[in-house]
Length: 356
Image 1 (cartoon, rainbow, N blue to C red):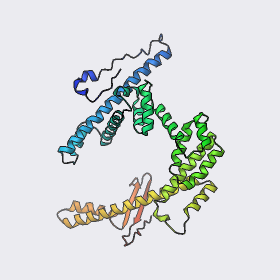
Image 2: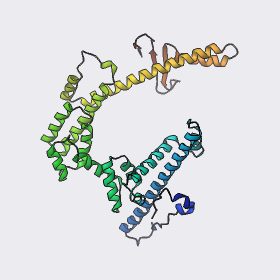
Image 3: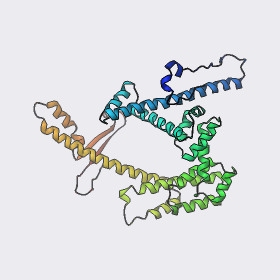
Image 4: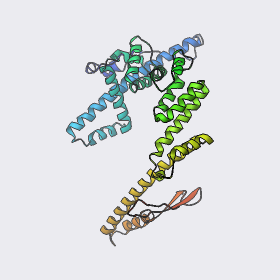
């Protein structure tokens, strides 16, 4: 069995001791081994690897955190030393901070008493991460199960999380929670509904709760959850779109009409895409302004002695001028190709227009 590594024991272990995995795999060609026993041996070996991966990644995260913190203290906080350390070991910054987050989660679970170091052996790696991301009450329940020697997989963590979400929520009708308590309705169907309801204002929760109270079969719960998801998406996106901040537009009535004719999903996607387009336009404008300033600066600093640099500026005129032109696809026109033309006007008010 892979032993859980307590922070105080690492210095006393040699690499050979910490990397010892002693197990033997069954012979795949031995027909004398029953299929059930073969699968059990494979599963046990896989669990050892899974636990070993978790232990190793926790320690990798602690190591990375130590290197990073050392750099913060001695490297004037710029982080170049830490990034170079990662580069030398071919570790991406995203991977490094993911491991650090795992180590932080492990330390929190251990420090809070939810787990003992040896309890980590009961977890798969994904289950451990899922536990660390759960609310404290779920962490405690999972920890209690691990201390009893139960094998903790991601499925068990999600089940406990779903149970807690449903049974403690006031957003579900009492009769629905009672059906969840006696397992008439599995909590895995109700938990997503609760999470979507939490995103909605109370005025929109009422009709959804009434629908579930009237018809609590699984198909209706799925349908209502989908509607709640699109409804939340619509409401959240609508507040981000400046174009529809119009006094003559009633968003609530538009929403009711979308629900009535059955196009809520498309309407939610439309508003969400509009929000993304406005953000893209804002980013395009700031980037275009930056290119203009850089081009002007380089033009002033160059002349006849820098013909190639001037040639570079000429090529980039298609992106730095008021009329932007860009070819999407094959620039030679042999495959799919489309030329996009935009005109940007830098007015005193935010009235930039794009014409294509």
